Amino acid sequence: MPADHSCAFAPGRVNLIGEHTDYNEGLALPFAIAEGVTVRAEAQSPGSAGAQRIEAHASDLGERDDFALAHVTPAVGWRAFVRGTVAELGRARYPLVGAHLCISADVPAGAGLSSSAALEVALCLALIVLCGQPPPDDAVELARLCTRVENRWVGAQTGLLDQLASLCGAPDSALCIDFRTLHVQPVPLALADWRLVVLDSGERHQLASSGYNQRRAECAQASQLLGVKSLRDATAAAAERLPEPLRQRAEHVIDENQRVRDAVAALHAHDLPALASLLNASHESLRDLYEVSTAAVEATRERLLGAGARGARLIGGGFGGSVLGLLEPGVSPPAGAREVRPGPGAHLVE
Image 1: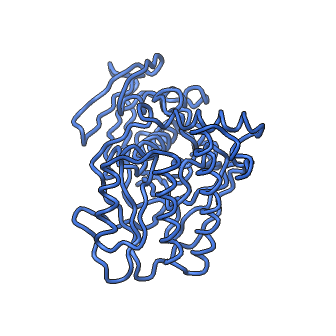
Image 2: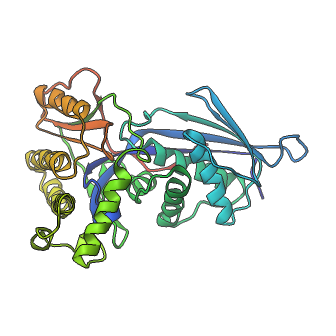
Image 3: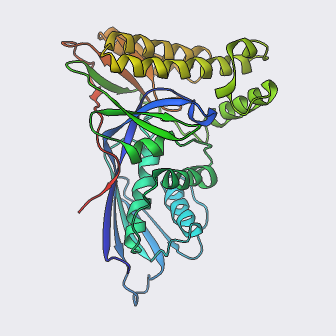
């Protein structure tokens, strides 16, 4: 039986290490953060004039959307996520009902903290519960649905990293995700007196309009030339035979997968200086081999390093967004930086 109302929260995420590896069937090590997106849903009364419509209000933006539940058309911006989520839930045969949606967020959009995945996940949970269905037990199933929203309705050919991190987050833990098997393994993220902070470059990124899709296409081309299913199977020796820039893209992915393995080992050994070195190596690879950094991102990273960060790297798809810094005990972050700690995954709110 449909519910009268529902409310769901989904967190953003910070990817500790393992960037642009998810769509290459590789490894990544993200964690959910405290900030995220909340969606409050209220069912429309059956006799109301707006029945069987979705009326959405993005309270932080002061913007609204209104469309028929039975006839969802494309849109842009945040509306594309709402409409795409409704459409994909309908394709998955959820018995959706007309609803008023109120969307609020305390995670900044375009800052590389995965506000888009948080929005998709919170929308899914709120709408599923509103139509009287239990949320799926299988996080991968829901993550795939959310990814279809980005692929088909937003135009970003993203992988599953952000959605799985938002759904499966756990306090005091990062998540080692194997994107070939989709196995998710919690890894204790014990920082002691060290701190992780993010500093926004101020440069907004839109994955659908940035070079993200181009990088993904280059990886697919490199795999085809190497005769492998994905760059997860590529070797450094074989990658040397690729033409530029495909060699660079493959080299980044191969080395980044190893950096994830090394980061997991460093966390188990409580070796935070080693983790800091891996963050620096990851950034240099993203900048020089994958070419997704910008002048604004580099200036932001220099601010963190200048303030005493032991390691720092860009996070998210690149082309703007935020920089993650690992600070030793007693080191103060620069103005504007916010501390981030691992928190719980998406959940219903009473």
